[in-house]
Length: 243
Image 1 (spheres, rainbow, N blue to C red):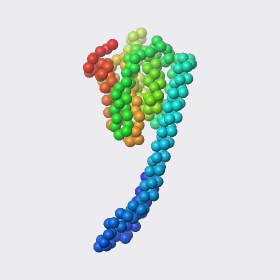
Image 2: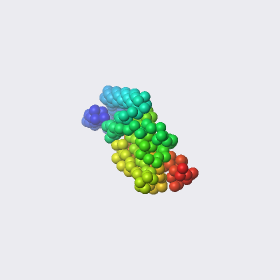
Image 3: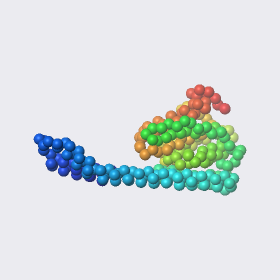
Image 4: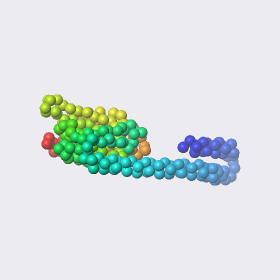
């Protein structure tokens, strides 16, 4: 905190000006003077920190309520006309997503798997995955994942998918960073590297306030790798299934 640093610097400057090496009790006097001078600054820092935590909790509560309201309205309408998902953290690069009616079509429903959390310095990463063979299933899976109240308020929900369009004889693939620059393309590279076909994978990250640098990509890839391997959808998976 800039204010605290300024107070501390001023106090140390005063103490150095008063320094007398042979004076008895000099260290004790320093400690007492530091304690008295820094206490107000420390209390102010603590007060600001508490206020920020309260503000964050209020924002999260509002985001939870909005996500629940939006999802409930979409369910009640049966998806008629589609609906627009409003991200909880647009300040981190998340954007609105509009879902068409096909994302509510029960004929596009697929099973969704959820991985175990990976936690590092208060950030949490959880992967979700599903088998898909067409765009309808991709949209259904994405909408269903974002309908989860916890997932809906994640700081980022990056994803990638690929499947073979049998009718056209071409492979369809895409990815999205959701504000975490480069994360979507890394997930796409992972799907290619481990030989996944007909798979949609998404990794949710809840930012804990401490920047992780390149480690965040390691956790994103690890979370995705674990769920794909466990399901047997990758060439190195324990089950090595394609169904």
